[in-house]
Image 1 (cartoon, helix red, strand yellow):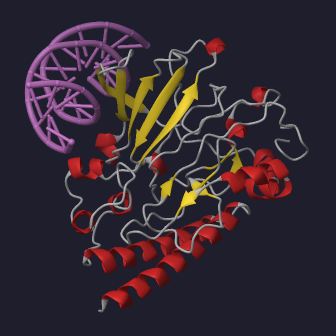
Image 2 (tube, rainbow, N blue to C red; image 1 turned 180 degrees about the horizontal axis):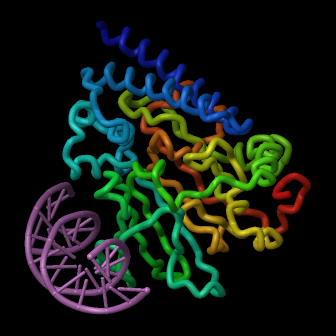
Image 3 (cartoon, rainbow, N blue to C red; image 1 turned 90 degrees about the vertical axis):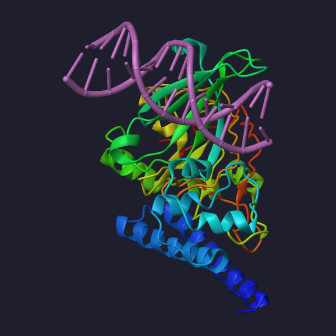
Length: 338
DNA sequence: GGCATTTGACCCAC
DNA sequence: GTGGGTCAAATGCC
């Protein structure tokens, strides 16, 4: 096939991918059924494989998780063609797998009053496997991996680094996505019918549309979707800066803070509930950096900026600047949390 | 006993 | 050679 034909084909596939992503975003706001969710996931996966074949020479017989991980550069930069060919060929070795895993970083500030020494648990179970003194860093870096690495072949890891400047701030770097999520007993339990109803009626999307301030947040989201290299093709991801999340394994969006214990509902001003932390911890920073995020079919971090370039492929580097939530933001507006 | 943490050693990329 | 990341044995806790 001529190169220009491949480019056109790639563009078309990219368009389809983008539309699927947009559809996913809309579905996110309407509590899609599991079937709908799966169907959309397959559509996105199909586009991804097609692009992989187109660019990488065709081998797509890889584990789904690895296939998705192939979409992401560990450092967020676009990879060379040679590298990409490898990505579509071989995911057998764990070390290679890890190198290809998506990476993103969150900065969490621990409330001084919660008595915790570090960022609290997220919904996953982690096992610490190492600690290193880092050159130039005052505090050692801790390394965690998913408890279910063995049993469920889950290669998610995270690194926790305490900030030198502010010891109450932890930089948590996540690598890879949880292959164990569908089995994870620690995963969030289904919401109560009441809460589900609330979420359904007050989806993040609707809230963004209806609230000028949130709408502004969305407009501030920047998703670099420039087509620079075809191989970078993560499935649909949207991201809301610290305020909203579409959680994996769930078919709905909700304000991240809504995950927190109900007792916290009265104190929502600039409180930041990290998606990587449990409901027992509130973090008082609005800084939520998402770096080099590539994503995985189930991570469901979505970008809401629909006014991007034509194609979502390319490095798919999510460069979301820190979002500063107005302390006076009316979180108690009708329909926001209640 | 099972699971988590600690920590020195090892591997590998730069 | 150096530093970051991981491994795995030893140890602790429940």
